[in-house]
Each structure stands twice: as C-alpha cells, then as structure tokens.
Image 1 (cartoon, rainbow, N blue to C red):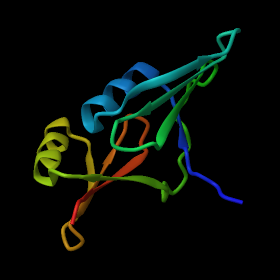
Image 2: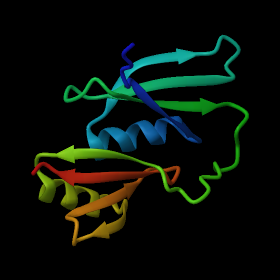
Image 3: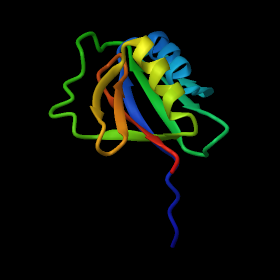
Image 4: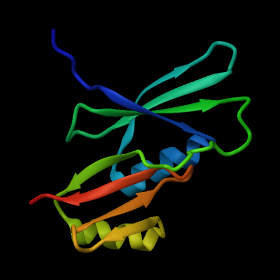
Length: 122
C-alpha cells in the first residue's frame, strides 16, 4: 500500500486577496476550481511547475470572522533557489513574520495569518 501526499488545505476569508498573495509571494497559480452549486463554498487549488503538491484554498460564504489558528504551530515549507531575492521580495511585501538567522531560514505569513517557511537550496 502506497500513499502520495497531494495537497494541504488552508481556509481563507478573502479568496481573491489570498490568490494574489500566493502568486506574488510564491509564484503559485490557480490550477483547478470547484464551486458549490449553491454558492456556499469555493475550493481553489494552487501550485507551480516545480512540484506536484498543491495548496487548496477554501472559501466559505458564511464565514465572516478571522479563523482561530490557535498557537499556529503548523506551517508549509518552500525551498527557493534565490534565497536573497526571495527575502528581498518578501521584505518589500512586508510579510516576513519571523527570521532564524542561525538556521538560515525565515517565515512569511499570508493574509489569514498562516506561516510559510522559506528555505534555501543547500
């Protein structure tokens, strides 16, 4: 029996704002969309050519208040070939939320507060 990891889900309040952020910050673009016939939810899968893995952004029509992320100890990690360039882009966007210089990594947060780890290729 073999399992393949295919996607992670993140619930978002403002789907368009999240799509714009993920494309600008990480180059992830919409690859598939599923909308409920009654308009109660929209699922948008985003990815890039560098990985088969996708992120599923879930928008729920009736959700109005920010999601409670608890201690927010969960994150998604991304390796990047131009660490300095990525750092400069994210600094300019104002989305860097934590830096660990000793480990040579940093984290950005998306519009809903989810943390995304940025790791250089080594």
